[in-house]
Length: 227
Image (cartoon, rainbow, N blue to C red):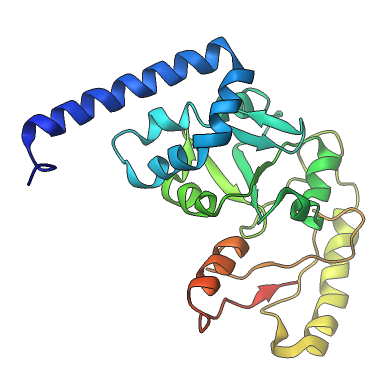
C-alpha cells in the first residue's frame, strides 16, 4: 500500500532523475573515480536497462562497457564515436569471463580494426536484447546473428569468389559428415586464423543466454548451431 502511494511515486521519480543526473556529471568529471563506483554498483544499474523502461535511455548514457579494441571501460557514446566508416551496428560478445572471450568470433574484427563490446555479466544478454539499440544504432551479437564485415575496416576481402566456391564444394560434404550435430555448415569471411566457429542457428539464442537458462533449468535444450 505504501509503495503504491502517489506521493511516494513522485518522490521516487524525482530521486531517480536526480541520481542519474548526478552520476552523469561525475562520469564526465572523473572517469577513474566513476569506474571505482561502477565496480561496486554497475551490475545494479544495468538491471535498470532491462527493467526501467522510462529511464533506460538515460541509464544507457552512464553505463561502462569493456572495449575489445581499447582493452578498457568506455561509454556507449564513445563506442559510437569510434565506429569506422560504413559501420552501422554495435557489435557485442557475451561470455562468463573476459578470459573466455578470446575466441574465433573476434578474429575478423581485430583484422578489420572494428571494436567489439565484451559483456561478462549475466544481465548483459538480457538488456542488449531488451533495448535493441542505443542512439538508433542496433546491438548485434557476433555469436548469434548474421553479419558480413569484409567490406569494412582496414582489410578488404579479395577472394569472395573463392569463398563462394568453397561454400559450394566443401560445405555439403562437411554437413553430411556431421549430420544432425549441427543445423548447417557455411563458408565464412569473418574467420582469419581459426578453421571454424560455431554460431547460433536461425532464431537461436545468444550462447551465454542459453548457458544461463540451462543453469536455471537442467532440462533446457538450446538450438543446434551453425558451423
